[in-house]
Length: 488
Image 1 (cartoon, helix red, strand yellow):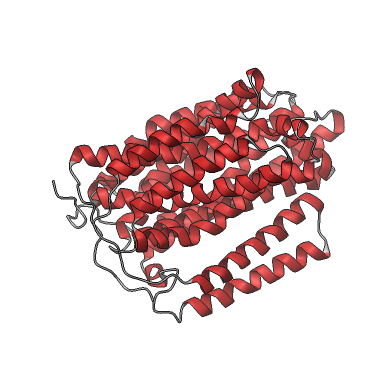
Image 2 (cartoon, rainbow, N blue to C red; image 1 turned 120 degrees about the vertical axis):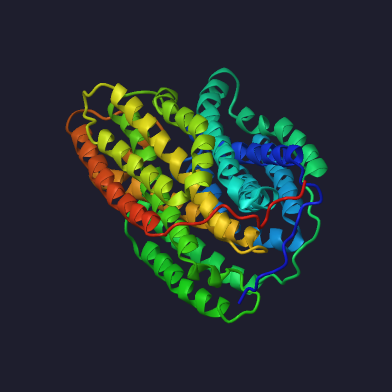
C-alpha cells in the first residue's frame, strides 16, 4: 500500500513566483480544452479533406478521449516520482510536437495516431497540474488557485468554439493544430525557467498494475463505443465484459503492493472519496447534455456547427469569470455547500433545456447555458480544491491523476450516452451525421429525435442527483491550516 512521503517543495515559492506558476498551469489547461472543442467544430472539414469515412474519422475524437482516460492513471504517479514540474514540462513538449505532427498529417490514419501523441501530452499536463498548484499554494488559498485554473479550461473551450469556426472558414483545418506550436514553445520556455522541483519522492512504478488498468479501461471503452457506433453485437459485449472483469483483477493485484499505483488509503477519507466519485457522476451526466444540445441545434433547428456552438458561449463566459470567485468562496466557507449548489444549477439548466421544442425560441439555450456556466464555476473549483486539500502530502500527483482519470472516463461514458440515446430514436448513421452537422432532420424524424433527447436529459438529471448526494454527504473539510504553505 502506498505510504505517506515527505513533502516535495518547490525551490522558490514567493507569491510572485507562485502566480507565474499558476499562469503556466492555466495555459496548459487552456490548450487542452481549446483542442477538444476546436477539433469538434473542424470535424466535417477534416472528414471531407482527407476523404475518410465517418466511422474512421470518429476516432480523431475517440482516440484522444480514450488515451486521456487511460494515461492519466499513471502520469500523476510518475510526476510524484520524477518531479511534477519536470514531467509537466515534458507533457507540454509532447503536446506541442503532437500538434505539429497532426497539422502535417496527409491521411486519416496518421492523424489519428498523432492525436494519440497529443493526448499523451495532454494527459501528463492534466495529471500533474492540480498537484503543482497544491505544491505552490497553501490549503486555505488553493480554492482560489483552482478557480483560476478552471478559468483556463472554460476560456480555452470558448476560444476553441470561436477559433474552430474562424480558422476552418478562412484558412484550412491544419491551422487548428498549428496554432498550438508558438503557444507551446513559449510555455515550455517559461516552464523550464519557473517550474522547479526541490526534491522527488522515491518510489517504484507499478507497470503491471498500470497495464491491467489500461487494458480494463481500453477494452471497456472500446466495447461501449462500439455499441454506440454500431449497436449491440457479440464483439461489443465481449469487449465490455472482459474490460469490466479486469477491473476487480486490477484492484486485487494492486492492493497487495507496497507502492500501489492507486492510493487506496485515500478512499478511507470520506471528503476525498465522495469528491472524486461526485466528479465522476457529474462528468457522465453533464457532458452528454452539451453533445445533445449541439445535435438538437444542428439536426432539428438546422444551424451550422459554428452557430450552434456560439449559443453555448454564455455558459463558458460565465464559468470563466465566476470560477475564481467561487474558488475563493470555497476557501472561506468550505467546498460542500458550493459544490453541491453547483450540481443543483446544472440540473436546473437541464430542466430549462427540457422546454426545447422544434419551434421554441433559441434564447432558451442561452439561458440554460448561462445557468450551466454558473453551476460548473461553482462545482469544479470547489470540488478540485477539496480533493487536493484532503490529499496526504506526498501523494498530490497520484491523487490529481486519479481525479482526472475518473473525469475522463466519465467524459467517454457521457459521449457514449449521447450517441446511444440519439441512435435509439433515429437510425444510427443519421445520428452521427447530425452530430457533425451534415444532416438536418424534418417532420416525424425530428419529433422522434427530440423525444430521445428529452429522455437523455431525464437520465442526466438522475445521474446529477447521485453526484449531488455524494457531494453533500462528503462532510465538511477544514481549510484554515498552515500545512503546505509555501515559504516566502
